[in-house]
Structures are given as structure tokens and as C-alpha cells.
Image (cartoon, rainbow, N blue to C red; front, top):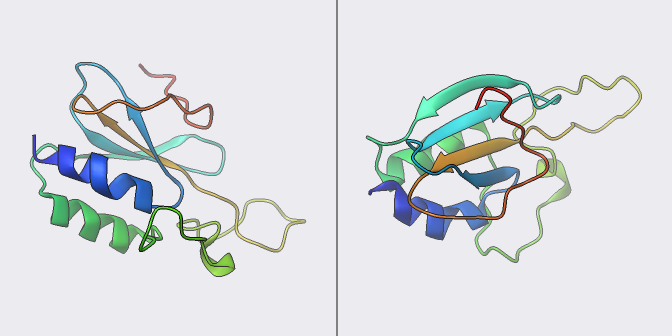
Length: 116
């Protein structure tokens, strides 16, 4: 599967991107809002690794050079653009999840899929 290289090599570099393994599911990017409500789904099966990386860049995800690198403060809440929280000056995190059948990861408590 073409998505496997992305899952193994690129996901650890992205800030606020969580991979959730769902056996038998086609790989897709699930975009969530500040309240972990689903905004959109993008099928990844027919995309190349470079196309997926390009998409995430366009969506505003911050990609570190190395997995252990610190995320600059201005990108801490990327890709969120506006905060729904009135009393907090900084942007709030928006999370996304990659669902794939080709790799496994520990489930994240942050990502909820109530429709599955």
C-alpha cells in the first residue's frame, strides 16, 4: 500500500496529527474541530506519499524536520486558525487522525469516532 511509507516515516513528523489503526478500514484523513467533531474525511488510498504530504501542508499542519524536534510556539496549535475559546489568547489545537489498515498505533484518547 502506498500510504504505508507515509504512516511509518511521515506521521511522526507532523504536529497534531494522530494515527489510529482501524482494522479493515481504508486509509483516510479525518479532520476534527476543536470539539473533536468531524469536519471532513479525505480518502488516501489513491494518493502517493508526496501527495499526502502536500495536502497536509496546504491544510496548515506543521511538519518537523526530526520527530524529536520542538514545535515552535507559533505552530503549537496548528492547523487551527481561530480559537472558539474566548478567554485564551492562543489558538487551540485541532486534531486529525489517519485511519489505515497497513500500520498500527496505540489508540489516542484525543480522537473519538462515534460513527464507527
